[in-house]
Each structure stands twice: as C-alpha cells, then as structure tokens.
Amino acid sequence: MAGYILKLDNLSRSHSLKVYSEEVEINTHFPTQTLRDKIKIGEIEDVAIQMDPTQNDPRYCIVSIKGKGRLNYTIPELETYQARHLKSTIETQRSEFQRKAESGKSESKLASALKNFPVIRKRFG
Image 1 (cartoon, rainbow, N blue to C red):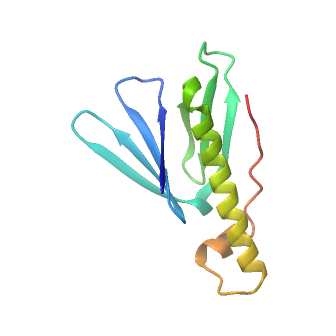
Image 2: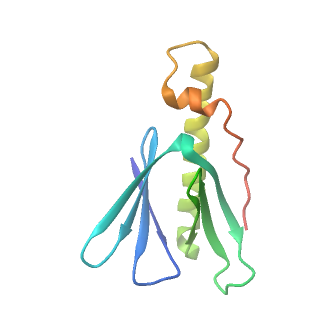
Image 3: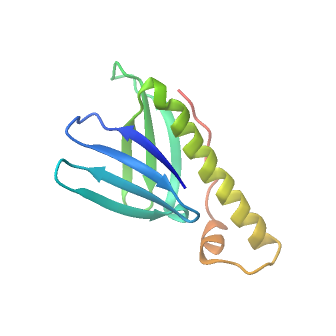
C-alpha cells in the first residue's frame, strides 16, 4: 500500500490517493473531516499527466472514472514522480489481472471487468 499526495488548485482542501490491490482510495481532506471514496481499478478509464496551457503550474493528473467524469489534480514539481508511479502501479496491476484471466485460472470479478478495459495511454507533460 502506498500513498500519493496530489494537491488541488483550491488550497482549502487536498486529495490523497492510496493504491490497494483492487482499489484506489481517494481521500478529500477538510479541516474538520476527511471524505473517502473508494474506486475499483476496473472503474478507472484513464490516468494521465498532461500540460495545462491555461495554468502557470502546468502539470496535473487526470483520473477519469466511469460514470463520474474526471477528477483533476495539480501536481507540484517534486510530486510528479508519485503520479507517474501511480500510473505504473495501476498499469502493472491491470496487466497481472489480465494475465491471470487469460491463463484460465480462477477469474476474479476485477479480471473479468478488465477484459474490455481500454489500455491506459502514457501521456506526460
């Protein structure tokens, strides 16, 4: 389990992402509470690091979730490697589940959901 801190433009709150074997947990931190949203890796359509031409701080991470649209996170320069590691972790786990499903071993719900999951494109700003 690893945590990734990606701050939003709105400085009054921040998000942290934790990667588990089949889920990504997104925590929204407020001064008095933390809201948790767990998303199955099979629900993630894309994770991208892109340039934002309208911002002075050009890096941000887009996490696209089926049925929920996009969540945009700005990534401070020192934390860019964490977002790349998040992409790599999701891609690696997705590949492992696909391999197990294709080899005919006990197929998990996630593996069957990932059969039609599009390949995550590598896009770096």
